[in-house]
Length: 112
Image (cartoon, rainbow, N blue to C red):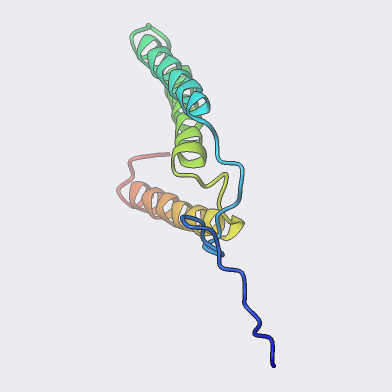
């Protein structure tokens, strides 16, 4: 009598590939990131209403926007927990968009 070999099937709801890493954050972690985003937004609004010179105001707002963007992308879009290749594709697309934006601004002499 021959013994049949059976492969272990993955548990229901779990995938065997897909590029997802373990260790996704808890609900508490998402709430904490949401509070941080709300505080950063409040800071942006407060800074926008100050009489700060434009040479300081614009870079400050850009810096706050970049920090908020990074938090949203890494946590809420799960790039922090997914395969690194997804992050690379995202950065390549973002870099291409930024370069195109700068080329258009320079061609219309809007900056510099």
